[in-house]
Image (cartoon, rainbow, N blue to C red):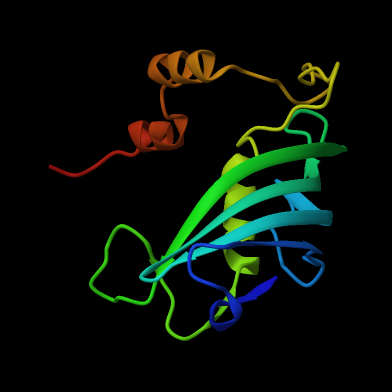
Length: 163
């Protein structure tokens, strides 16, 4: 979604609506597989030195369940605000040189910030121990490591040395 700041009238809001295609974006396949749908409604208002854009994002995200590794559909509805400036010294707003502002990367950043770090499918359970493997909690693992000895060096006890 691109907004041309030169076409905006000072103090007058302009509405935009567009579906953004994120099919070419590479994601971490162990967390997010894709964003098949993302519709953005934006209201842009130019206040001479600041361009204020209010966005409403409706997106469908395909994530990966942390327990079962199955696909999980997440429907996200997000409202946010972006403020742009053409003053490189302004640290409170996003700096964009020129009149054309491409919102796609900002929208993607908002989406990624709103996706949970750990996605769990409804009714999914952690796997249990099975043949030739065990599932341990972090606390169990740490306790087991503290109580274990390293047997790789035991063979050196049988080596006789000359004094």
